[in-house]
Amino acid sequence: MGSFSGGIFKILTFIFITMAVLATLPRLSPVIFPALSGPSPTFDCDDGTLEMYRHFDSLGIESTPIVGNLDMSGEEYMESNHVWLMVKSGDKNIAYDWGIPRFDRQHYEGYTISLDYLLYAVAEDKKGADLLASAEY
Picture 1: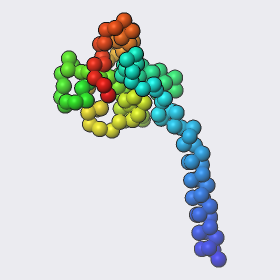
Picture 2 (picture 1 turned 90 degrees about the horizontal axis):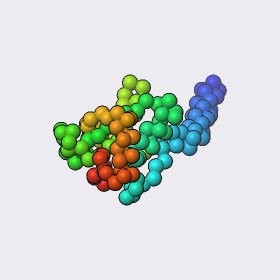
Picture 3 (picture 1 turned 90 degrees about the vertical axis):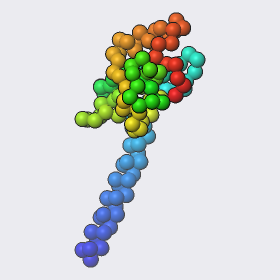
């Protein structure tokens, strides 16, 4: 009888944990996947990166804007045509592009830029000077 009750306990524990995880996921989803507008003539990757930066910053999560070229490896700074965000997660970094975590190698190459430069690039976009986003990703 002891092994029967132990089996039931394990099943009930598993069901409880599963229900807790399923109940928590919808609440975590907006944190893990920030909602962004899609690319448009007035909203490009630097706008999306700034929006993600502000999202994570409001949660107290450290992040850094990165510029690079996803079409080539080992690009020079001046060959950069896209910007995304590197988000600190414990002792690791996770690349976020358009609100989605990215795990391909290209998103872990590139050059760090300052928040001030990202803000400057977004402001220049509004004037018509496209400093950081010439590619459509």
